[in-house]
Length: 417
Image 1 (tube, rainbow, N blue to C red):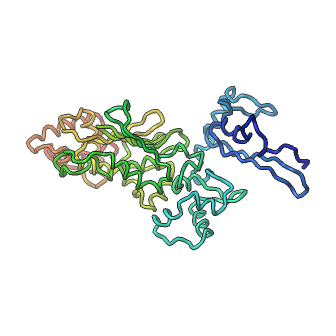
Image 2: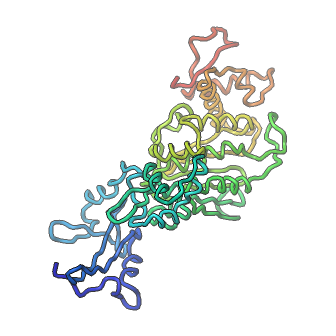
Image 3: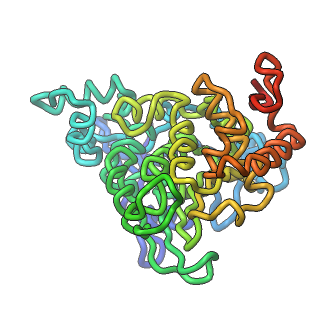
């Protein structure tokens, strides 16, 4: 080592420190680390420690570069290499992604909510920080790095006191927006949840429920003095949106509240068809799902959508509408509407969801159970029959060929059963 007279921490660009000048012109603003080191021999070293790209190329002044042999070239001229950069971490679990590195045990405890973890897990807290760190290492919230301790994205997403402390996760904070009418034209209020998902989950639910009107007539099954939407359905859909989002896609998990509906969405497309949400379960973030399940924030695998549909039916609301748009998955709950106000697609979707719910409950849908779901009087059985016929024509239902041969008592199954 021959050393250098260049002092990285002291160098300026104009009136701005060079380190900050560089970071402010990078997108995303990576966790660049700069050191001035004096070796025992007296040699001075200036060290820039640059993390590997996470899931997209880093741009400087909106331009990305790549090394080709001994030359530096604009990345835009090498589309195949750029595509590889975008896909680099698609299969990398959250426990392997570093959100903050080079920390002391005190730093970790200051950035992660230790109390939340031990309270929700219902286990005693260790007497010292070493015990806390060992537990967090077991959970893969923390790993031992080259210099000190590294907080993983799993640990930060679950227990961060403030996600703004972790640059790669700033856009994974939950956004909640309340609109005045049925569109986005006028916003009444907005809330951004900066806490880790386990730390802030109860607070987020309380804030959402506080924005929803009560004392609405929601059908025959329930009293009038209840909230417009079943709270358990909102809880399960919110947990789903946080857990199953694609962390390689840009965008926030969001809750948008309109006068006639609530939309809960997350970045990324589902790994299974939306028609199979009730009976199938595939998660792209198993470790996140597991820890939040053990903390009591979400349900056992596969039971969450059952509860959403069951409570939606109990409130006699229009069917849950799950859609995919570009790179987002959106679940919509609608305010109460009488059967006559539902369009054909809504009636068919409600019929299909009812048949799925019956099937996973080891029961079968009949004309009678569908009448109960919609609150249709017995003498109007032909109304339910028409809805069932439309669902069969749409190839969402099929007749149960093991049941009664009488048309009066025929039962129906989802198409996949």
